[in-house]
Amino acid sequence: MWIRKRRSIRMPAVLAALLVAGLLSAGAVQQKQTKRPGRDVRRAGQALRFEGLRSPSAPFSATDRVLLRFKPGVSADAARAVLESYGLRDVKPTLRLGFFKARVPEGLSAGQTVAMLRLNPDMDYAGPDFRTHISVTPNDPFFSPYQYNLYNHGIVLDIGPDIQPRTKADADIKARAAWDRTKGSPDVVIAILDTGVDMSHPELVNKVISTGRDFVNGDMDATDDNSHGTFVAGVAAAETDNDEGIAGVAWNCMVLPVKVMDAEGNGYYSDLIDGLTWAADNGAKVINLSLGGEEPDLALEEACRYAFEKNVVIVASSGNEGGPVAYPAAYAEYVLAVSATDYEDAWASFSNSGPEVDVAAPGVYILGPVPEWYAGPGYLPYAFGSGTSAAAPHVAGMAALLLSVKPWLIPGDLMNVIRYTADDVNAASDPGRDDLIGYGRINMERALVPYKLVNTRFILR
Image (tube, rainbow, N blue to C red):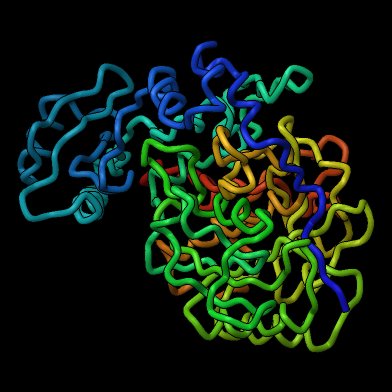
């Protein structure tokens, strides 16, 4: 029984588009046949990108200050005296609203201080003075002008003379805010079951943990001879903030290449089954499957169950035929099925749909890496692709980030976090869970920075 890659991941002549996107001077473009233009583009990208402040290593919740307010009738002088008697330091009033801000006593945390102050019957409010800062912006030169899928401020995608769509602001997976919480752990490994991975690509050379396993040719060298797997691996976990190319969803997580499809993008269920069990036995915490077949199969379902029961999160593309959800994405108990949205947060009509769809992720005009041999002489090794193949690795990267901060999560619980924190972007026409985008387009910020979901103000009675 055959499987195939999600065929709509179109990769036009690798960043010829970037060469006409205004990042190069005319002279540099003319030289592209005789000299590799990568460094020229990188310098131009540096000049254009926003130099945001680096975020601190501590999360938002790590603070040494508290915010407080007394009940009506307590004078400002009396309030200050009470707070100083608790050992609080640098006690100062806010400009309005009657609050005080103060540093916690020596030896106490903000949480301990708040708990102590709430015992005072004259206290109306006591809470941490949470930190705030500019969201992290990676220095990869193609991040801001092209990767709307990660951070979208309403840009125009200059892909070519006839392809220049204007994106909808905030039609993205909220990656920058999530990266404030974590950029991933190298202990979390994403297995890419696909056509292999170009392990020499600058975005992946430091990310692969081994040469992997090739079940198509029966060896231990999962080198990509198609380009599809390299693209998928880069979307999930390209090396980020390295002044090169693109940003990946899971900055610091690692990649395990597993080749289960041939140079033409075809394969057998049997190789996929072996790939699933091998990846589960060899350190994978997340498995990405940007592939599928039309027919259910008991052995394939059991392979998915095997990985699931070994605490591996399986993410699969729903398919691009506009029909029912493909397998193994359709095995809803064990696999997170992903459809695609576009640059306006609308469902991509090529996506397969059905009750098995869990969530959606951007899958139209996504920028990712490809092997240099695929790009051709004089072109940068990146391409734009469209398809649920491009959507799925966004979710795989998100799962890896969640496991980086909460390694105890079992697959079922983690899948629910991803489902229930998604944005219902088609609520106007299909409110609630639907068969097109499931619970919605994924929202990394909501999943990874949960304090933003709740009101942090505590009113004491």
